[in-house]
Image 1 (cartoon, rainbow, N blue to C red):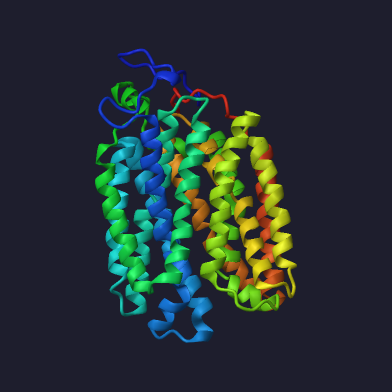
Image 2 (image 1 turned 90 degrees about the horizontal axis):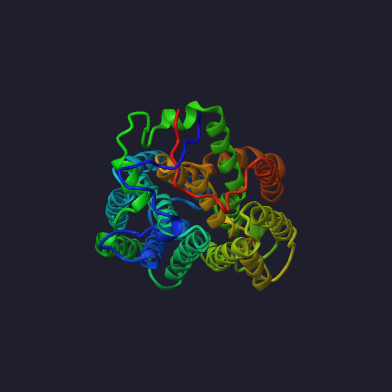
Length: 428
């Protein structure tokens, strides 16, 4: 049997509406607020390189004709860190606790981001991005697992949407920093923000569901086991499908927005900067995340919301890549619409957390967002292969179409999880 009955412990399982976040920590919505701040700093640090790619590489002596290739390589290095870090922090979150995983990840990415402000060479820059990626991998998944297990069933979609929506304002902050300070100062701000957040996180406690799981002495209940996760064909297929549904989000963020200056030149649009494109797109994404969460609550469905937003992504990508000769204002408006369309991120991560039991929930909710983020590595590879043959606009269109087709096909076979009780665990 792959899905077990509700967790049996020395105490009866608490009904979802009565589960406190902890005996002495903040209340359920306090957990949401602290988690949202954590994701804010996570996204801020993650996108500092995106908005400061050009000026920072110029300062390190990288020539104009190498900015695109070197930038893509550094993004890939950061994403490798995210990928490996997600499995480390996810497993730690299931075995030792979501809060411990949060503490460790915040400390690592804060120190790596501070060190990034001091780099003087490309290898040093690459090392800092690798370490920052390792640290950044643990924030969102552990926060979503904690919030999902803390809030009542009827409110958890709203809670995770607020975490993602408010957290993604970190992308807006990164873009604003690009307008106000130098790249080295921005990395100092990001690192110090993470350390300040670490002090705030001290009051967080584990959810009662996790405490019940740790009190369960049954030897067959494996926590944070990759073998348990991937040995089952059902769970393995589920994992892949959830990742594929998220591909369009990172296509927009990691291809269209990062390389927006080059795409703008191909569209004969002048005066475009990556920082401003990311600013407008993340304003849209933050609004879209809250909106998708509210819509999910209103429709009492995760799948329908995911489908509607994927259709919106398709329309927005088509409009952006066909915006030949428009004004810079119009292109920035399209960046905003693209951001809104990718606002299903919160619903997707919530859906991932709801699909698996408490003993694998941190592993799944931490790794899936980062596997999606790391998908930028094969995306960049395909993009680079298509680029000389098709040109930048057609290459982006082909890649985006492929991502959307895979996402829509994968979504069809996911089950609806809106009303699921999370008080269960997975068995081999």
